[in-house]
Image (cartoon, rainbow over all chains, first blue to last red; front, side):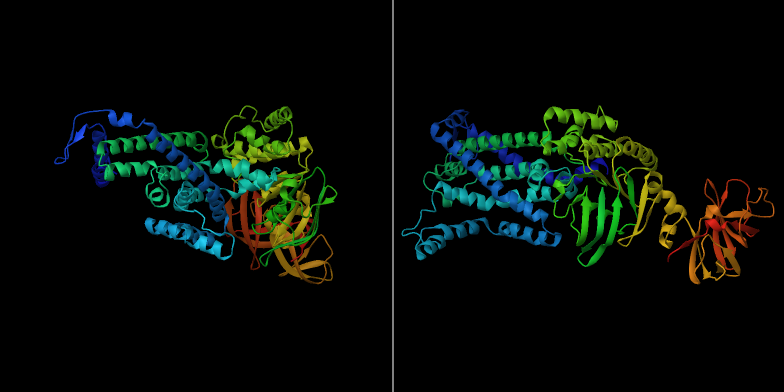
Amino acid sequence: MSRRAGWAMLAPTVIWLVALVAAPLVLMLVYSFAARIAPDSPWPQGFTLTHYSRLLDPLYLRIFVRSVVQAGLATFFSLLLGYPLAYYIARSPLRRRGRLLLLVVIPFWTNFLVRTYALMVLMRAQGVINSALMAIGVIDDPLPLLYNEAAVQVGLVYTLLPLLVLPLYANLEKLDDRLLAAAQDLGASPFAAFWSVTWPLSRPGVLVGSMMVFISAFGMFLVPDLMGGARSMMIGNLIQNQFLQARNWPFGAAIALALTGLVLVVALIVQRAGRIDGGEVRR
Amino acid sequence: MVEFRGVSKTFDSTEALNDLTLEIRPGEFLTLLGPSGCGKTTTLRLLAGFEEPTSGEIWLAGRPVQGLPAYKRPVNTVFQHYALFPHMTVFDNVAFGLRMKRVPPAEIRRRVAEALELVRLGDLGGRRPHELSGGQQQRVALARALVMEPKVLLLDEPLGALDLQLRRAMQVELRQLQRKLGATFLYVTHDQEEALAMSDRIAVMRDGRVEQVGTPEEVYLRPATRFVAQFLGEANLLEGEGMATGHLRWGDYHLQVNRHLQPGRTTVALRPEQVQVRWPGSTAPPAPAENRVHGIVAERLFVGTGTRLMVEVAGRRLAALLPAGPGPDIGDQVELRFAAEHCVVVAP
């Protein structure tokens, strides 16, 4: 293929990315240093670093830390639930695999908002779970299942689980059975074979899946907004707040960029870790 | 060392192994030889513990091994595609089994070094499998299994992925190694040349049964069945009628064979290289041979070590292998001579 033909094929994507990703990012960057934004003009005025220094306010730092913890926990629980699931699907007979995978993907095709509301119907005070528990007499008063950090955690894991299961499945599915046979032949019990062969070889899948969940959870605003309480605000909600309620676009832009920066750092760390160990795994 | 006693194995109603009885003696190199689907790999996997027999018993070193999972059996396997652990160094691959047995680290270092030395990979311990050539990977797989000092080493077509030259070299190396260690090897291959070159004994298998067990010379020179005669090397199969005189009536000829014949339909195997060819210009002095037939050369094919002739004898064809040098042309009248001792009666 000639160089020109190559560029011709890339051009639509490049234009698309420049117009819709690069340009807004640059705009955000400019906004984040703006002292003022006049109501009658889209152009920012003045230059200041106060928006960034404001990020260090304990009030906002706490939201940052909470977001990291929530996202980290969501990643951990997704892994705890998703690994056995991905493993089970990958080890199923070929015909059943497709069907099981479909079951994982279907919720993904369903509207995010609808799914979250559905979950709330289950969990609210007069919801399915509480009603059922009260009906059989386990509890007398409804449990506070919604509007707290645990609820946010449930919502995050529920919505993001497929993001972990799919890349992990893709990795585990490639696992060579003969390696497990070799491990057993050399005296490894099925348990030992898993920890010495399957787990290290699935690390690239674990890393990619975990990163997908972590990054998505980190910037999530819908789940904490709907299912969280007054004190479960995450960084996504903060950004939303600044743009829509406080109308402080420069500060919102500064938070958004800080979030993007942090996510990039995480991605780089994961990529490096994957290269050291997983990079050589490919044959 | 190992005894298969009436072992059968059925996979979803297909019979992979049918009433196999076979003994592997201590220190011998036994080869299971047969075409794909003959049950040779199943036999290996049954001994390794990857499959359980449907019926029958397997004894290893004086004990039945049924129900013992693979990781508890004192046998180790060299897999067809090596199955080296890609995320581990050569050293860690070879050390894997010893670590599973919780051997002390100092002893692991010593034994792994010895094993790598044995397969002449002493200085490659730090490499990853994907940095090695096929032949080197093969040796790592060998070292990884041998370091465990298995009662029987199982080799599942271990040379199948190597090119011809390397294959030949590895055949010699494997055989020398086996002699040096005095180890018991159970070797699976579909390559008859490999089986003949390496084995103490060969078990020729077909359709889940053993057709014949014997030394390479025995199975080659005295094939018990048609199948064995044809699978190992090339054989003319002469089908005729056994006669009361002990001869085989083959068309118009009465051939003398090495065994007294029962009356009835009989098949005799004859190797092409045992057939002597005489033609008008031939100069070599004729060797004594009981049987002589006449025919016309229908095909000749130069095969490097000699010339292969197809000779039409009374409407049937016989193959003969002529040593390198002058020979008859297509269409020439020739006389074929062969000794009675080379006519081996085979079961259908």
